[in-house]
Length: 307
Image (cartoon, rainbow, N blue to C red):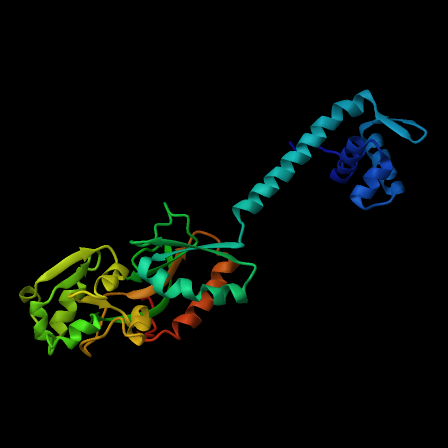
């Protein structure tokens, strides 16, 4: 059974008059005329069949019935306002949290974010760095940038690009004359990234070198650590041109061989399908794809359509 309630407009005017103890102050607060306030109070009193205010000249005070009604109406409007604020806060679309890998975030994304901020100064970006793929069930992230295959049906995968892998080393090691051919790698320390154990075997096989004939060096957590470990050292690490472009240009690292091998997987921007997509996500996706197309050493291969 539907309950009949007084006009919400009249109740809103009543709450303002009762709180301000003044028709004129309520009119100013509500941006209406004094007569409009008086009219709404009169309508409410007629609908309820009671007087809500004592009127003595310019002074007013709540009657017994008005005194009983006021706290209920006031609390109700406070509850509505609180619920609205919570809803707005839960859908705050002005902050964009992006989670990605250490190397991609540190060497590529973060140095370019100033461009995104200049284009969209109203969007506040937050970068979360991780060694592994984003987990939307656990991580406070709006989007993730990952490398792999589109395996999760509850994720949206926006294709970005494909990259190749190749070894890098210090200029000193290359000048030593101990790296004339890929076969010389059997006598070098090959630094592994823990979560990318296939990198060296894939590249060595493409170069015609048996992986089992090469001695493996230390294992590190991420590509950035691997690159830094070979700046002045004796070892070699696997890299991607987009992430070592500056090191190659400035001579801190060199590529001893021209052989490049596609890495296992493509790069994607991902976000949950079940969530409503923030407009900031769409803005970031457009900007990211534009930036990706300017990256050195990448391949843009449109993904095959789903069957």
